Image: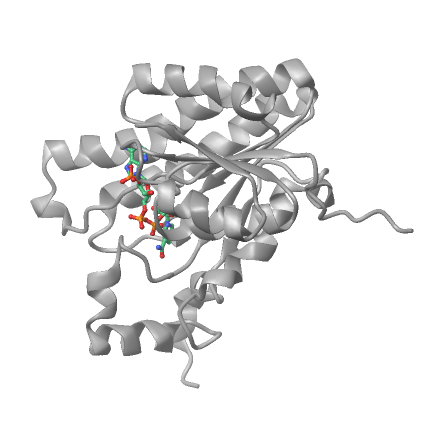
Length: 262
Ligand SMILES: NC(=O)c1ccc[n+]([C@@H]2O[C@H](COP(=O)([O-])OP(=O)(O)OC[C@H]3O[C@@H](n4cnc5c(N)ncnc54)[C@H](OP(=O)(O)O)[C@@H]3O)[C@@H](O)[C@H]2O)c1
């Protein structure tokens, strides 16, 4: 029988920030492909309902507490993670946040909150988990980026800086850890309705504006990310590293749209 390049049976995946939103989409996809899961939230108990949902899908999962802005929390988490199922093969650095403000309104604290959560945190989580991956000679690190990893946007200055930073960081980590059998890539989602942006989706005019700019003519749906996360977590991507894969219905290619009348 041909090798199933996308089978994650026997693999252990950590998904940070899985108490809601995209972290849960990624977890379900990896679990359905056969992985055991370690899911995280800042508050103990916030992943309990999700663990029960996964159990009903026959997906084995455990929860750990992790605040990526807190060095001690990252250390405790990194020590506990490999003990849950004996190892960690896959890390999805998903935990993140956003504050939408035009540049003149951004405060010092806004900047720190966004950059600490979306760039410094994922770096130190990856560093801590990579120590285990290096010891086992294998790993898949998937850093979550965004369309703002490659495009600018008013109101998203610090967020875009964090997402552009994660793209650059990923290339350096790929170079650093490739010799240990570890791949490091960015999965960059386009527009998906979650807690982070639900207020925007309540504005019909904005949704119309958005959809007009997406070549596939719709926002992202939960399962649209499944293929990419399983690909980057599996043998299928064994020679892919340092790359940024946009799952965005094509919105990132639309920069010249205004120049051409359709
Ligand atoms: N939704 C989109 O369209 C979209 C597009 C591109 C990229 N993204 C990125 O995808 C990721 C998930 O986004 P989402 O839309 O699912 O957001 P969300 O619904 O707001 O969920 C964010 C998750 O991150 C966790 N988190 C926040 N701050 C944290 C911290 N300091 N330490 C540890 N965990 C923390 C939250 O967990 P607790 O609050 O339970 O701790 C929560 O589980 C983010 O990195 C986001 O920037 C989202």
